[in-house]
Length: 118
Image 1 (cartoon, one colour):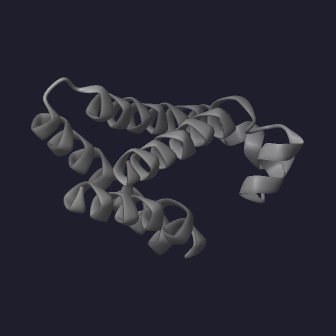
Image 2 (image 1 turned 180 degrees about the vertical axis):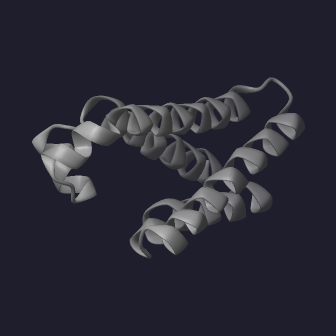
């Protein structure tokens, strides 16, 4: 059950990232979250939407892994997508800010531990 919680949390987190990047990028919420000016947000909104779509793929992969009929194969699917999240969070921490590691990679690392122990 702990595995379901952590993998589900990471999936929901990335669904929220999709929403922020695809639909709220140029709104006051998006500007505040990503610390951007309206001009910068407008100029980068297509790139942000693409980034949001990738977060949606991570969400889909994690949910697919949770629902996969073979528990062993589902576990491998979850570990693959959680590893992708850790890489993305690590890259974001190195290029954007350390906060991304805490927000993105740490929950995925906890979920990996839960999957491996579960």
